[in-house]
Length: 109
Image (cartoon, rainbow, N blue to C red):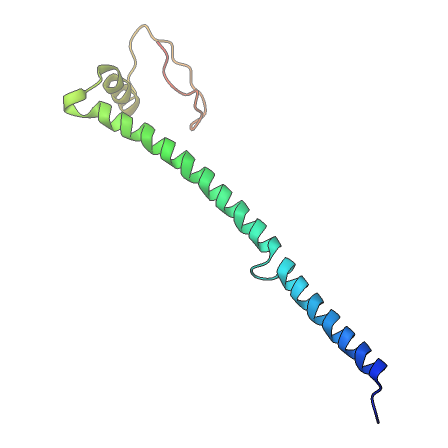
């Protein structure tokens, strides 16, 4: 069976279209495609936000540790920590109990 020039041209066009479709699909949906890049960028953004939050928390804790060192002891912080740890209060204080873990559960004078 002999393939004519027109049939050969049509087969080559179909094969070329399949190759273009294959590479286009993998450019968009593949392991290193556009969709995966967007997903990875979202993960990077989330991780960056978490890193920023943890760095701020670390700075705050580092500041509190610095205030508790003997050479720079803050009497108010020492009093607050001792009373929180030992569950003490002053006679003229009003104690308002709130659920554990609630940020409003600090003692007010």
